[in-house]
Amino acid sequence: MPVYEYRCNGCRRITSVFVRTMSDPKSPACDHCGEADLDRVMSRVAYHRTMDRVWEQSGPPTMNAGDDYYRDPRNIGRWTEQRLEQLGVDMPTEAREMIDAARDGTMPAPLDDL
Image (tube, rainbow, N blue to C red; front, side, top):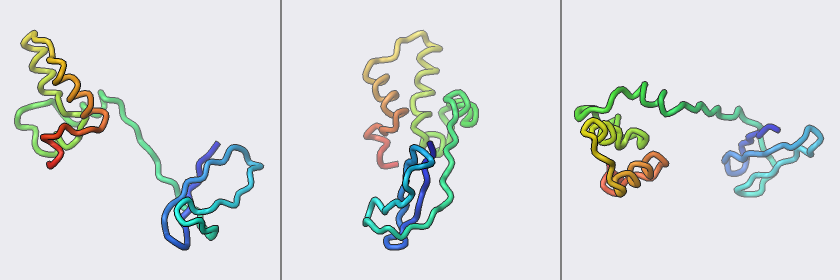
């Protein structure tokens, strides 16, 4: 069951069309302006990485990791987690919630402006 993408010749925006079967009618309309004059475009490809792979490519968490390292929300909290584990200290609940939220894509308020 493929998803096809089309560019509208009216508003130039992309519309995705889910096709359930080959016998489905293929007369899509633009989701944005309703135009029926569409051209099929090459769909983007998603490449998913495991957290282990993300962290392997990012390198180890350090105090001098550089600005780009912490722009990826999945890396936020790695140094804190690592350091607390080394010290044998439990992660405070509020810190755990902020780190988990950052990994889900919600940047903590102090980092929003970076």
